Image (cartoon, rainbow, N blue to C red; front, side, top):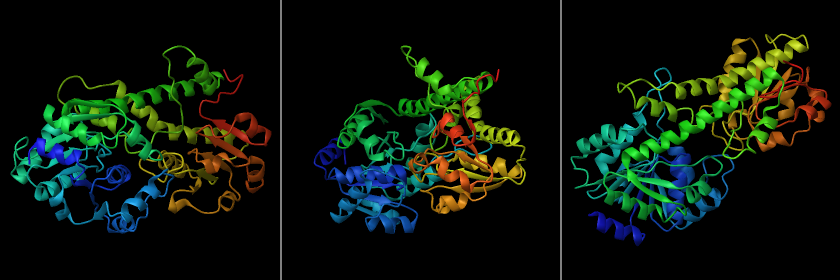
Length: 446
């Protein structure tokens, strides 16, 4: 099949789309294309997830507007089917890869085990003329150094002659998956300009924003750069918050006033950066420079600062306990929120995990609550019974509606550490709490 023939099938919505990996990104993409009228095959390793999807049940527990209804509709119409059988990809005209691409914890280098496994599976099953698009975020150079060679070697097919290749990195966030897919621009990085054009014709069916044509290398750079940019900006906001604590200023007031100046966008500080993208994509970008000159310094420094924010939450707790004359060792600490993002069940690279580990090393007894994470669901008030302190790590709506006066009687010590600006200092203190918050400097603390 030629690119011209493939484009005609795409325009007629008769092209069969295979999606490898039905996680947060892959399932949303599969649903969008099926909702646009394409026949979609989803390949997923977890049988229990396949069963739920084929039953029209959303496997993720967070709030994903429109997703449950869309999944139920496209399953009812038969436009989406999920399977664990790689042979299904033999029918696909377009294969989208949406598997995780983490970094190794110690070396901060890419761990492409899942990606290589997916590529091998695709190579063994894809039909000649198929278009393979990597949506996973990858280090610059990965398409040329890993993806293309592996696909050609295992399949025995030559790129641009017997199959086509591109990179269109996703730009989505849990809790906004369908909206992001529709409204966020995409970079269609093709192995050739003609491939990029066909990619744009495909994504135009689900994207109402710009579709920019580029090379694979440019697409790799754009995605890793934009997430590294966010990480650096958040780190700057966190550093300003730490300075505010030292000098007795409120970072939220500072932020509001700074952002009144043109072309200023001071980001929001907080208790740590989580999720699948920002904690690891800067390392993918840094990795691409290995052996090619002086290593970057700003990006790793920002990454370290953001990684240390959960540890700073523990420091704030120790300080508050000292104020009431109570030690951290043996204290019962209630951590509110384990997901990395409000109103979702996504726990990837959770800042709360880092905090909990630190508190346990300090000798605290830690209890955790999260209304969206199955392991930590339960009665919040029962969990708070006899707690010596509360640490808010996630701004779930469930916590924003809490009445501090109502929960104070459950606590042994009314101490509140807020890492997400869920509560205002004045309100907390009026309710009788000893309060600490990220960036909330005490007047007169210079």
